[in-house]
Image 1: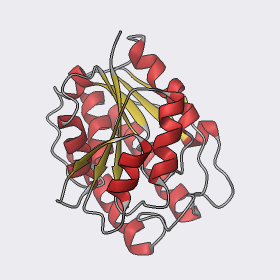
Image 2: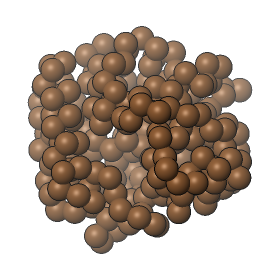
Image 3: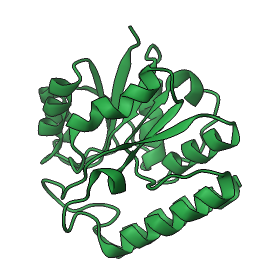
Length: 225
């Protein structure tokens, strides 16, 4: 059977990570890897207590954390990326991995717009920015996606051919556009999105975080076009 690993980048998610790991294990028993990206709280200890393998990546950056998770799963066939803020429903994991496990796609993206967004979970500026960049990506790369969210699954063999190098918030976008350029099959699966359980989002929770994320995502979208 193909081996699946769930990689969860996390930075100061002590209030969320234990319950998230426990729920992931209940839905998809197996390998759960939490990448502690320099947390100053008990994220790493809580993740271990929840049953996850913990990998440390001191270099701050979403891409650095994702790359460290990939390196920690050399024998996995399918990799799933899930944020550590508990804003996604782990129950949607099965829908995310199904197309890749079945050999129907190299990359499956979780679409919040297809699955549903709880009131207040995604600020209006984030919705608008996501819509703009999704339309731009569709036009530049011949796609028809609805969302640029980070919840996704990918074939590890395929990912190894992409030469990933964006170590910021641009990592998920790089994976998408390089897959499109190489002719990989991309599908979407509906996923639900709700307000994070504890704390404030590092992206949508502040204007600075939103602007930085948009800058990196837009830059990567244009760079590989």
